[in-house]
Length: 204
Ligand code: PRP
Image (cartoon, rainbow, N blue to C red; front, top):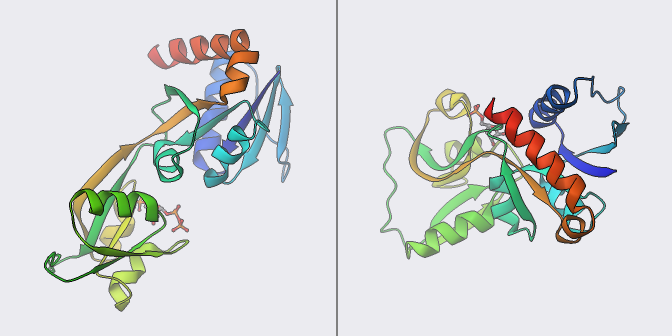
């Protein structure tokens, strides 16, 4: 049995659809249920940022999670396979018509991802203050909370709708199959069989 942590939302839906293709049967959680046992798997539905915690503590053997989340948490997991779903970019953005003034003594950057943000600007020797927010990041520069944002862009619609532009792309992200190191050892055959099946289904 393999325990799989899935991030609630679109990636979970796309992952379950992928498992349906793999095993030719329906994988669906009952309404409001957070656990699904099917075909030798126990799926659990968790917040995307919590997937690494479940995997690191081996409550799940494997997880499906965005590279952005892994990087933000510097999560100690094996990145086994890029699933190519949940594609997005982590970008620096600011208001249209305004250019970012890097000569300011300290830029204020609003973000859900303070670790990626600090690392990125520190590598460029730019002094910033990262303001940690939990959502609606695009609002911050519009009301003077920050000079810029570091946020996820998928379609670009939210930024466009809020009169923001992309200044820099920090990283490209997509969802990965990640594995707990002990589970990888203990359940190597099961996990590698899943890996092979996923890989060939994704290639076909
Ligand atoms: C993410 C991100 C952007 C939006 C980007 O937020 O923080 O706000 O999606 O998507 P788009 O480029 O397709 O418009 P999410 O939907 O996760 O909501 P949140 O702000 O509540 O975290």
